[in-house]
Length: 195
Image 1 (tube, one colour):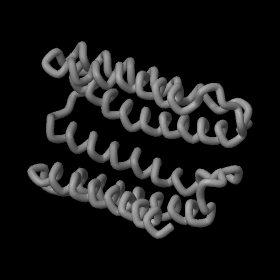
Image 2 (cartoon, rainbow, N blue to C red):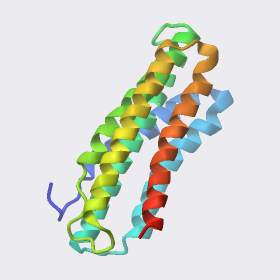
Image 3 (cartoon, rainbow, N blue to C red):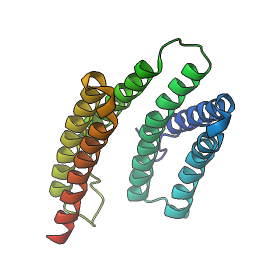
């Protein structure tokens, strides 16, 4: 991928899917329409604000690398939002026939698998060679740790939703998710404090 032209097609597609599925879910679920519309409208607005506030016409190589990372993150976040929104729209429209328990389990497992795919990508995203703000070796080590933790967390989360009694899945799944992400955040804080 060229640093001169950061990829914009995939984040645009994901953003379009989030907007489309969010609007469809709002139309099919009038009681929770405000929530779906907030996601559908908020996602592209947040992306636009991030890019506009972060980049004021800067065209350096470092800025282009950061822009590429932001767009990759938008693509990943869009995927994590679009899949549950699409499943909600499909279930609510009666396009897919299944009971509520199976729907909840499916959505939990799918979220876990998407999160695992994201965790697999984290260590593969290289650290900027142009950046003078960080120790490149420790940043890459952190990315490897974060990727492993996200993968382990996501697999446990998906397994809980697939096999645990439904009364416990939300509590246990959230406990695993918060613990995994919390460990990554703790390591980031500790690495900043040790500098």
